[in-house]
Each structure stands twice: as structure tokens, then as C-alpha cells.
Length: 394
Image (cartoon, rainbow, N blue to C red; front, side):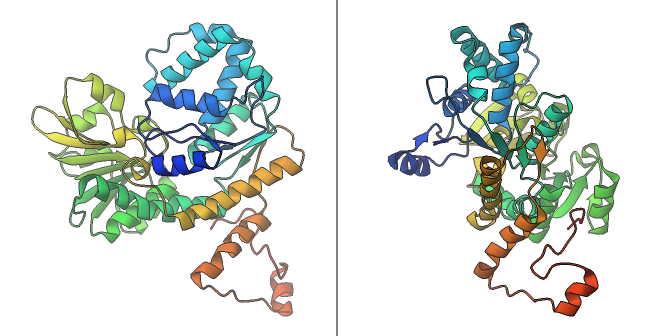
């Protein structure tokens, strides 16, 4: 068994305890991107041409590495392309894949044969899976854990509602009350972030591209504007979109003095960190994962180098809400191992979703109401559930 993390989120004491138990750990806090991809490869290499039979993924990086590796072995010309304009993350991946190909031209094709499937729990990682499926590039079955209700409506919303503030507070100690906070994106993650900041007394502004999400935000009482409308006014910026270039260098050049910029979407390219570092802006490391950038007329603070602020500057979501997510991951792994699946992207059935919720109720002292036989017949459900159709939106 192996374990890896992203570059800032590993708790070294936890990793050491796992290693002491005899489990291989390829992770430490403060990895470089080169280190990170090396760790990912090591986690996927069991030696003698063998690799994992199942992958538990969180963001899709392990899945991406396997697929890109196989693609490069089928078409080595991919390795000769110019990736200089890509982000540093992707550049380091391609450099490692090139090095791997030069050492062993069948490294990935030999290992992919062992993989029965992957379960993925992030919005971004699931989006990648559907893209690969649409392009007919997906190499093995995948279970979309993110769209289980007990994942996206709990981890994404309630987890971020607590861990965003934890990350910002540990990093800066700033008082949020009275500040203007811009949350970019009003999906489940954005909704949790808005609730969190409003709970501390902030004046919250939302940015959105989706008219439905924008209408939801407005009817919750939030102002909905563009990033450009907030420049010189907002004190804290939080990206939560899953998309790239949400906060640009030009935005940061026009921000209010002492503005705090952070990301809780999956990847660091939501904020143009590469462009910021390449610009002639003085950078001062205040402490680990807190950097001050001094422009000509103002300064801003970037948290966790644009990566997940709740992981880089704190310890992520509380364990209770993560239990819900990991229960789904466990069920997905059992599903992949015990049942044959054609290559595709699947979701867990509603019965299992409800069971995950049911397993967590006693801890909170919850007692469910039971339907009578007449009520069951009236609404046309089973007494033990599921109680909602698959298309129901919670």
C-alpha cells in the first residue's frame, strides 16, 4: 500500500506514523513540483513491471500520469513538443515522463494492464474523467465519487465552510469582520466559503459565469459582480471555480493595499502565480506558505503559493466530514474490485449514498422518522429507501 499527498498538505508526523506501521509513504510537507511527480510515480511503481490494481484518486493526478504515460509510449512525439508555455506543474510531469520513457519504453503500458479501476472524489478530477471518456482515451473503469450527495453536498460545502476560515486565520491572523471578501465561484465549494465569511461578519461579493448560480447567490443576499468591479475595494479574494486564470496578474496589480489572495479550488492555476513570479515584483516570504508581493504602490499577500489554502495553511477539513467522503471512496473501491465494469464513468447507487448518511447520524444524535405502510404506499417508495429518485437535486 502507498500514500501520497499534494506538496503542502502532508503532515510529516502522520506520514511517519504510517511509515512506522510498514506502509510505504512517498510524501513530505514542502515538496517541489519535481518531487511531487517523483512521489506520484513511486506510488504507482511496485517493481518488476507491476503497479496498483486500484487507484484512489483525489484530483486526478495519478490517473493523469498513467494516461499521459501510456499516450507517450504509444506516440513518443508527444515528448518532443514544446511545453514552455504550460504551467510548471505540467512541465514537470512531462519532463518526468520523458525521463521514464528513456529508461523503460513500456513502463506505463505494462502497469496499466493491472489496473481494474479508479475512484475519484474531486470536481476537477471527475471533469477530467468525463473529458477522457468523451475523447475515447479512458483506459479503465472509473467511479465518480464527487457526485455522490454525501460527498459534494457535505465535503465541498460544509468542509470548506470550516476549513477556509481555518486556513486564512492560521496564515494571517486577520480579522474578517467588516472586510470585503470576494468568492469566485458559487458551486458547492463557493457556497460553503460564502457562508463561512458571512458568518465572521464579512461583506461577501460573488463572481459567477453561470446564471443559475448567480441567481442563487443574489437570492441569498450576496452581491454578484465581476472581479474587475471589486479591484481596489476587496480585502480578501478566494477562488473556488475549478477553472484557470480567474485572478490574473493585471487583477493583482490593481488590488487594494494589503489584499489577501488565496485559492480553495483544486489547482494553483486559478491564480496566475507563474506570471506573478515572472513579473518584476519584490517577493518576501513572511513565513511558510505566506508570501508578500510588493508592487510599486501597494502590497498583496498570497497564501499557499496559490494552492489549496485549507491544506497548505491549515489541516484541511475536519475528520467527521471527511469520513463521509472516504466512506464513499471505500464503497467505490469495493464496487470496482468485486464487480466487472466496462470502461466508463459510473456513480454509486442512491441506496449506498443514503447508507453513508445513515452511518453518520448516530454521532450527531439524529433519530430518523419512520414511514408508515400507508405513507410508503402513498408516495411509492420502499420503507428502507431510497427516498429520492436518482435525478433529485438536494
